[in-house]
Image (tube, rainbow, N blue to C red; front, top):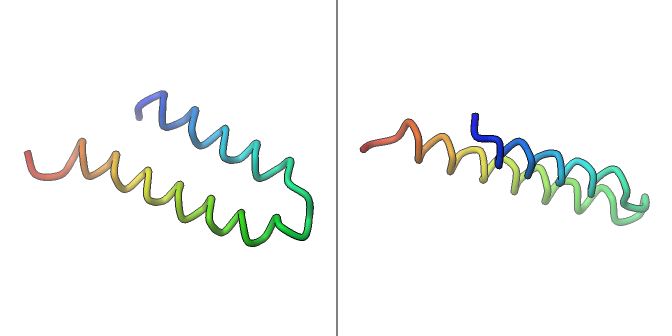
Length: 50
């Protein structure tokens, strides 16, 4: 797994952890969606059609 991906996920988790409650849920959903998109793109790039 590329280290940049791990770093991005850690950064996203840190952002998620430091947010205040009211906004937290909505933004955490966006972060989860973004993280999934990033992972999918990486997986597709490495394991998809050459």
